[in-house]
Length: 224
Image (cartoon, rainbow, N blue to C red):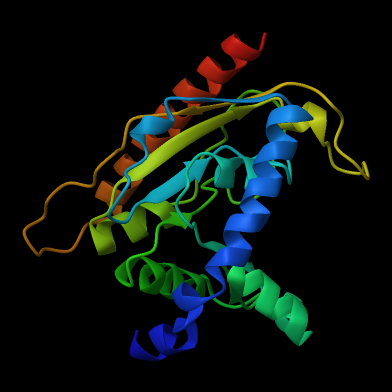
């Protein structure tokens, strides 16, 4: 873990001014062009670490997730994007960190754990990749694994409208309404230092799936 932490060192000291500037631009675009409405943003902690777990239907979900809080969030990104140094510096300043595509999942999990242990909140899409429709598909256990390893809560966020605004294959987002609903934090069980079993992580993942479906449905009710 020390090696992973070293690789990530300095990213929290990146250009915060750049991050805040880009975030402001993103929020203005989301609020004006996409008429983004964020519900219950107060449920996101103003201090401490957590995992923000949004639904994933579009690339637009990334800036929408960033717009839910003023805090600087961390995201995973393909390490190939860091090959061009200026782009890598820009991505790092915006809160991204590289993960090798096609590498063992353990590497990505270790880097996520290192981010949280360093004190930075993390955005993790528990569905793994973009899906379609209004049903939250079975989730990967990665978020539950990280939560149990670090003891941090997971906050589900349902994002409605992003699939229609920016569907795969389109070049630019369409000017339509988008709604994000923030759910209550979900905490892993206190194991008093014991290791979580596979069954416990599966149960936690199912709990997260149910909570994410609830806020996803709420977002669509507001959108419709």
